[in-house]
Image (cartoon, rainbow, N blue to C red; front, side, top):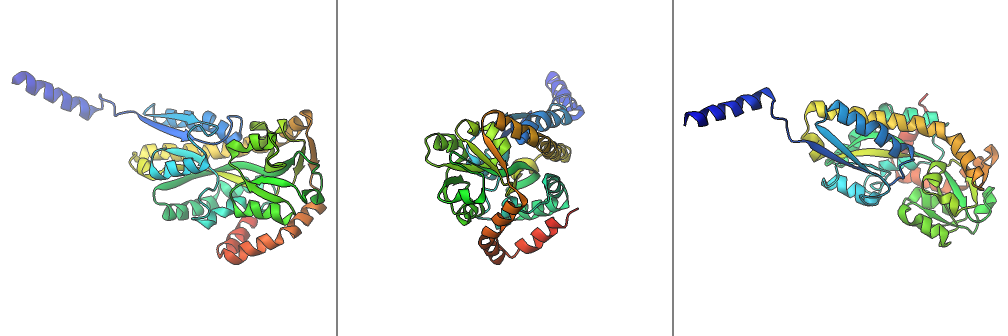
Length: 329
């Protein structure tokens, strides 16, 4: 009995002194992008090492790219129900929470640096708080770049008039679909993971994504023209399951929040630095790249005015928030 009491006392002392480490924590992180996309690369180069180092190895981060854990809707639902700890998504929740349409608002920013300043500053923090109120099982941790969206096609696409009669794959989002339709094209919703095949088999003529995505998804292999409209500077959001996150120590929560913020900032910097290189890469691959002139951009803005007027009329939050974003210096 004395031996038993001694052993019990030793175990108690060891636990109190921290000799016995807590069970290791593993975070699954999912995205829908190839590993060369700036957001995906930043997860590998910033989020994973910063979390693992900052937690002194108590947290292990496993990153899964290219839809390995599911499409965007699957990732959103996985984080929401707790089967995935962290994910990078666009706006699959915008029908439930229309404020997230701001991520895809057309012609909202002066340039990429303006967009970065907005989504790494106080406006992002404000929306994060409202997002958590709407979705209590999810926290928003950061806003990184998707891309400045361009149009590509197998058919000639070098001016505003060339949209007429073409079929474009657009995301399942009323803004994107509305833009294509207002430009005289038809829109078909196809998941990103099925888009290459749809372009290759000519189910659709073209699509809209940033040049970085055209490269990471190898769309240049099945597209001939790129029209650099930059009609939307879209974002990608880093989200975390609240039941998982809220159980962590305050120290570990801070490590993850800081890593997410650093990941978003790194992705913005890398994306902004990549645009000229991406354009040249596509030209070298034989894609005809046409810049959208100021005059053509104004034509597009006028053509999509029925869409933007409708959005402003239907969404009470839209005018105050877009005005606040445009005022950011």
